[in-house]
Length: 128
Image 1 (cartoon, rainbow, N blue to C red):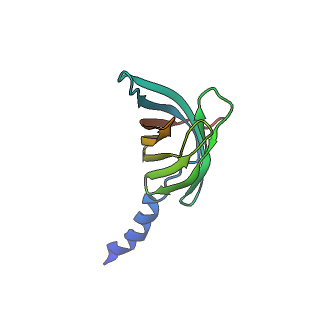
Image 2: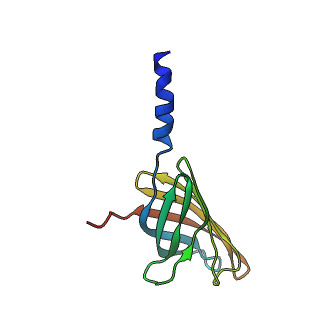
Image 3: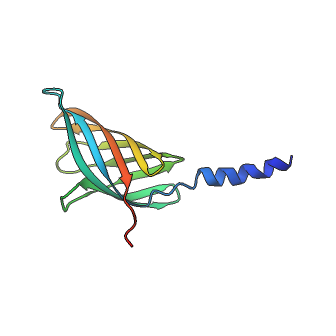
């Protein structure tokens, strides 16, 4: 019976993941024309309030980033959507937090063709 008081504490620890901050990494997409992998360097910045996630994601080195929509962190699973003028629809991201990394997939449509990619992000250290 004494150990039951630990359950609420354990629940708080398990849901206390915070992904706020700057992230960088790659999105790897297989080129349907020749089967090669196209790797694009990306950057992201997330803001978290409870389980709601907002922020931006875009290509490394470009000024413009796209806003994240419907962002949610459920335990270690992060989901959000992104759309832009370049895309003919919405890209959906489903990532899993593993230490200081986010790994997962994105899927959507570009120029009428379905596209999927592997996403690899690492948290950038906070500036001193």
